[in-house]
Amino acid sequence: MKYLFLSGLLLSGLSAMDGRAVFDKKCASCHRYEVKKYDFAKEKHSLKAPPMNEISRRLKKRIKVYDKDIHRFVVVSFIKEYIKHPSFTYYMCDDKAVARFDIMPAITDMREEEYQTVAEWIYDNYSIEEYGKKPK
Image 1 (tube, rainbow, N blue to C red):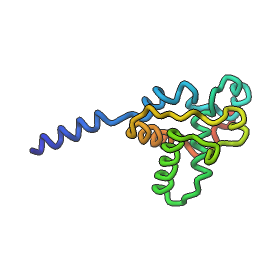
Image 2: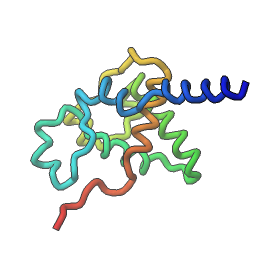
Image 3: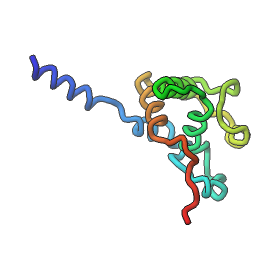
Image 4: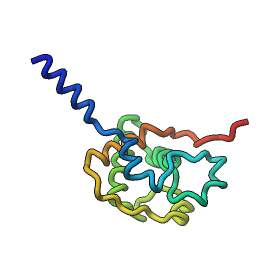
């Protein structure tokens, strides 16, 4: 019985979705992983959408919840819903970014587990700190 339980745990861990893989499949055609702030001016014309490091940073700063676990839950929930139902009503990007890129199209062909996994990956993968000061 103990071995059956351990085997089940191992298999469930192997089948867990990888947020980066979901991002690569569903998001990376428009969003880049990262653009350093000092490189943004020269790269902005080649971007189809804001880079994920900036999106994650802005969401984390603009959603004001001071408990770390609740903050993560709220930001991840926002990301999931926004992917499904993007809207001018509740976007959190910079107004210039929306003027430049518009609102993203809804992505409706994902399973709930994929929305959750990619949203968690976006939250966990990027820092709230300023995105890259120029090296000296």
